Image (cartoon, helix red, strand yellow):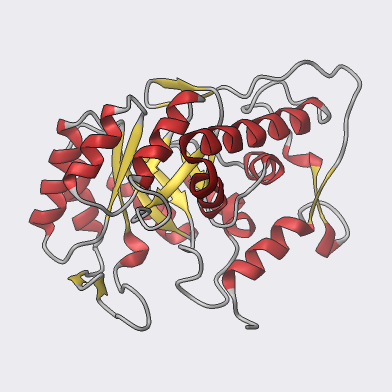
Length: 299
């Protein structure tokens, strides 16, 4: 399909080329720190949901694999008990809540996440309309778009950082700053809209709009260490791996998930080594070349 946003996103990733640099290179560090915690990798698990059809207790297995390699986990839709089981593994988890029509339900879920020791909470505001086939609903639950005042309400209802997922414009990024959000996830939710701009295409503008005021995560189509490297080079603090983790989970459970994240981190480490990037905060954005414009960023 011409407007397939996932395909367009993959093609954009693959259009970004990397300049190699060797003189004065050092052994790089892939450590990533956020919200007072330090992780071995800036590759995090995206906010997945409902994986019991992939493997029994699928998201708990994901959590175990991530804990083993000291990686951060986002968690999506699910029952309270599942979040409790995930937290019990010791993994650091960020709970992403749907934009339920009833704000009281949103706040209830925020409080539950607090009670189990979540590192942060947030909302995927891009699911306000559900999908074209179930507008205003997600799994038969009523959803609604959220206002700036709603976001401020959620931010002020918790002492945890509140992350807004589904930011794909400078406009929304500025509103997140105004609301006092604790982070954003740059995402088109795997193509809720056909012809959606690839997150990395718009990332630099969002980075400029946020101007260091909060961490920036990015997702959609990230499946390798090189994908993570490109996201970091263009200004993200971390990158979320989603669908790429489902196959390893299905075949090998927690061990498979852990191996995948180690492979991604090792590939990221290699890309950093051959671009003179000492750590994830010092990846020079000018190592990225934009093949479609025959050079570096034209803007």
